Length: 516
Image (cartoon, rainbow, N blue to C red; front, side):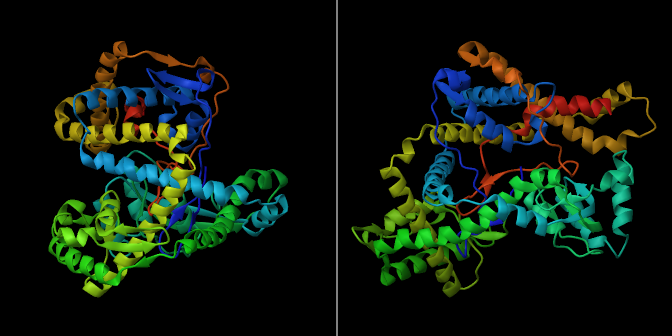
């Protein structure tokens, strides 16, 4: 599935909403039951359709994917009993996710569900966007290598030279580093936007994806002659593009109409006291460990500043609104589970950024309160999704621990490689790739041992109808790059639905590596 970024407000960036509507969770609609946990067919399909293709292997990809969900649940259950993942950061993450899901449902019910796009509008948009682009690309899973190549192109070697060296090192020819002609919206949006914006001859900036890092260069551009079947195929993508544009416009009006009746006023004196207390903490931590590596923005950790306020300030009303107040203490609580990132070097700029962040927090607080009044916090599928997110987060943290503990014996790996292949390709040429794959395989075996021990402790039911009418997952246009679907994110993007970790495909990947 494809996706396109759009903006609900001037500051935060939102991503196309793939909202999950409420549904019944009785047994006949469940594809998986583990004790009291139940996964509906609707929820499973939404997760399956937004997950990377690597988890959908074999002749029965849906069953393979369901097994990954089952395994992750069992591992999380075991780890939770051992006390793993019971720290405050997990509860904060789930608190923010629940708020996001409730706010998302507000937008879906009050804005998105009321937008209609006609077939004629879609057809016009498809015919306007009939440009196709073919690109050459360099892929690596090492950021340092990507930066080194990017900085050296044109000075030491050409893009073509670097690309050929990289491909030869993993036993591929130059043809493997070029795509087919791509229509707008057919690949991951971060890559899509670059492909359709860079000029011929230029090399893109480094593009980070879930799989690794890409450098792109346009190889060819053409105008496509669209047949009726092409128009039909592209219609869902362009419908989303049109929906994004309409949502952007409608959401602004909706938010204004929703927020204006509250007559919100921020107490200037209390706000300035907050700034005066927070900025020294931010300034002190700017050059230490308080750096958000993903965005290169420095941020405040709640633990760094929660004790820096006297009781009188905390009790003061920071926000007055029609029908109530929000104290400084309450606002700090809402920032405690929310990423508070800044990119500023002066107290005045800091104050301006904090105003905007308080505005975003207020938006989410009031939308969440209204959603709770409507009972959205009780919607079963929201709570089910939170359970899957918890499984994903706990498993990921445990994987980080295992990754530090498990060391690959290179001598052993070399022997495995040489016993398996009589090849002219030296082991050193594939060493890094095989080491990574083998380490994942060893971690996978550790997880499977936990799963095997857990099986007898739970009542597990899998619906056999998943074995019928398997749907093939579309192959990505870029080797190693999957297409992901994102929800709107507040104020950051996240995957549309919790999906199991890629580690559950590690055995399959290792076996494929040992065949090639």
